[in-house]
Length: 46
Image (cartoon, rainbow, N blue to C red):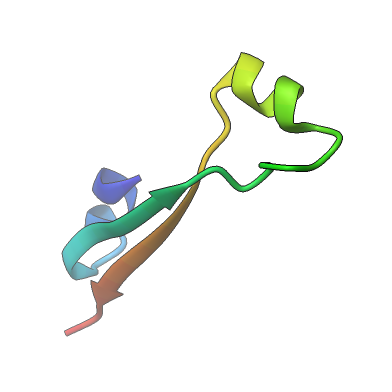
């Protein structure tokens, strides 16, 4: 993900936080099985 944003011209790209976006939902087990996570990302365009 960071590499894609860098190639699109963003700089100072970093992941601020990773989280379980399906926690306490009916799809939690499926998300865990396939490794699905959410992320807050910081990036800026010069």
